[in-house]
Image 1: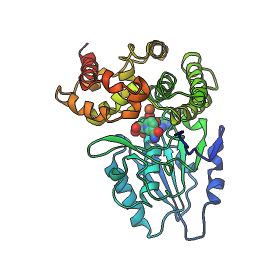
Image 2: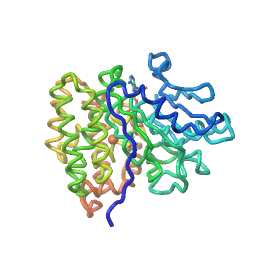
Image 3: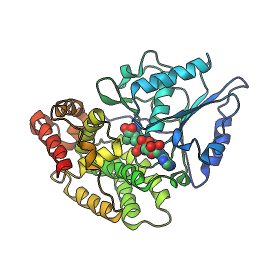
Image 4: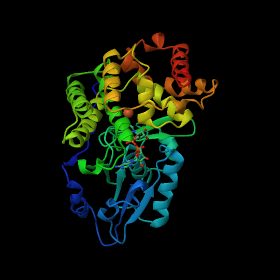
Length: 361
Ligand SMILES: NC(=O)c1ccc[n+]([C@@H]2O[C@H](COP(=O)([O-])OP(=O)(O)OC[C@H]3O[C@@H](n4cnc5c(N)ncnc54)[C@H](O)[C@@H]3O)[C@@H](O)[C@H]2O)c1
Ligand SMILES: [Fe+2]
């Protein structure tokens, strides 16, 4: 069976295109009673962007906090806030921020129309009802969350996305100007998420001409952005993120992402940083990718925050292995159908132990 995957139907791209948001949303405002929900990263609470958000008096503006990556429990609380605000459904949910805020918006738009708690839907194709119309507006580039069919959540016992055909945004607004205020190290870590998506997609067993085309172009753009730089670097990074997301949509990520999920779940390490710490140790599996990654780190004077691993206890490795080992498609993409023979629990444990030793080095 070939995958029949859903993509985002409407994309607007360009410097300043955020100004078109009001016009785009006006077509979705059904009647004078209807309202929109804006879910905006609270880093913008005291920022010029605040004044540019086209919220109307009837709309609900929720400042979301992403100091911790999105948890199912937070999604459920935000969904309740919307339900308490009105007994009608909103005519749109608009997520503005990095991957975390966009994922929160995706998840709330799904949970408004599906009963129960968001943890019940972590997995593949468990969602039964279409989401409320939802729009994604990235202010960091790299995760590909703007393009993907998942919203990644930490639940009571696992970090796993709600993967479904109802998850992708109905509209995305890609305005490179929104990246300008991002701290340089955060920009690097999130940008490397895209770079690693491409390396894992392009070296994986699921690769086909479709995902290769997106992955190769996105990888070239990452190299241009992080090795050459230049005035168009934010424009290129925003496109790279989208193309990288499209590449993994028809293939998969691999070893770095599987192990990084374990680090995030157990130690709360953010995705981009967890990926960089992990990728740096995966020379055996991705030799060329790791070499170029180190050149990019050097160019941007990035010192990886190994100290974040110092809180880890030996016994927590078991839980990390539990989280990583259920990600079958990622391992199969990286190592082929016989991956279980190659990547035993023992081997995963060794990889984590090796990573944790780095913080003592
Ligand atoms: N759905 C998907 O397909 C997918 C794919 C990869 C990762 N993810 C998820 O995305 C999340 C990581 O997203 P991310 O790397 O974009 O970071 P993020 O959204 O977690 O944000 C990181 C930090 O940057 C701040 N920030 C965001 N934009 C800013 C700006 N323009 N200026 C200043 N500060 C800004 C945030 O407030 C936060 O402190 C993780 O939760 C991960 O699981 C999702
Ligand atoms: Fe990623």
